[in-house]
Image 1 (cartoon, each protein chain N blue to C red):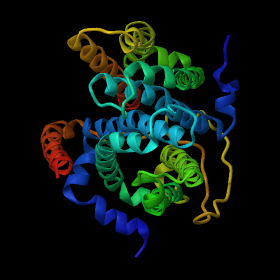
Image 2 (tube, one colour):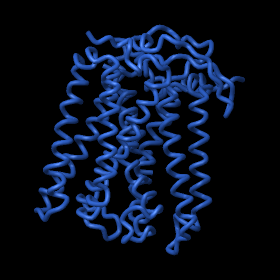
Image 3 (tube, rainbow over the protein chains, first blue to last red):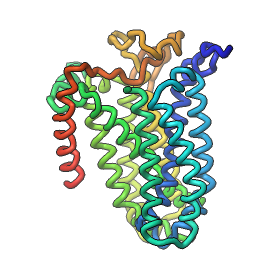
Length: 145
Length: 225
C-alpha cells in the first residue's frame, strides 16, 4: 500500500514548492516554443523564418521543456494521487495533456513542416493554442473547484 | 503606517474587493496571468537563445527582436494587468510578503536591464556581441527569478497572520522550519499552506457576474490604451 506521507515532496519542506516552480518554468519553455510556431503559422513571423525553420530550431528545447513539465507534474500528482485522480478538473487536464501532446507531435508538427491550405494551417495553430491555454486554466481551476 | 495597513486600504477599493471575493474572476485572472507566462515566456526565451547565438543564427537578432516586440508588449500588458488586479486584491498580505517584495525588485531590475541594454542590444541594428550575451543571460536569470518568486509568494506565512490555519495541504508539510531571508528582510517561514483559499461564499455568486463585466471593461480599456 502506497503511503503518501513517505513521498519525498511531502517530507521535505522546500521540495514541493521547488517542484511547482520547475513545473511552471518548464511549461513556459515547452508551451512557449510551441506557441511561437503557432504564431508563425498564424502569420506572425520571426524575421524571414518559416514555420518549418522555427519548428526545427525549437523542437529539441521544446521537447525537453515538455518532458520536465510532465515529469514534475507526475511528481506533484504522486503527493496525493487519489485526491488528484478523483477530481474532475484534474482528470480533464490529464486527458487534455495527452491529447495536446499527441496533437503536437502528429498534426501540428506535420502542418508546421508541410505545405497545407491556409485555413487548415490557421485552424491547427488556433486549436493548439486553445488546448495549451485550457491546460493552464484547468491546472489553476483545479485548486479553486 | 505599516505595509499591511497600506495594503489594507488598497484592497478595500471596490474593484479589488470584488476580485478577492469573486468565485470566478480570481482564478480566471490567475490562469490568464500564468497562460501569459507560458505563451509569451516562449517569445522571451527564443529571443534570449538567439542573442546567445544558440539557435536561428541565420536570422538577424535585431529582426527577431523587432518582429516579436509587439507580441511581447501585448503579452506583458495582459500579464501585468492581471498581476496588478491579483496583487492589489490581497495587498495587505502581499505587500509585507518578502517574496512579493523580491518579485517586484526583480521586475524593477528587468526594467533597468531593458534601459541599460536599449542602445546596444534591444533597439539597434548593429548589435554588440558580448553585450547581447550579457543581456540574454541577465534576462533569463531575472525572468526565472520573477516566476519563481511569484510561485513562492503562496508559501509565505506571515509570523502573526491567521494564514497558519490548517488546510487540506498543511498535512503535506508537518515540519515548521525557521529560515532567514536577508535579501530584503528577516522573516519567519512556515510550511506551505493551501495555494489560495477561495473566500467565495454563496452570497458572492450574484456579485460575480457584475464583477466579470466590470473587469472585462477595465481590461479591454487597459489593453486598447
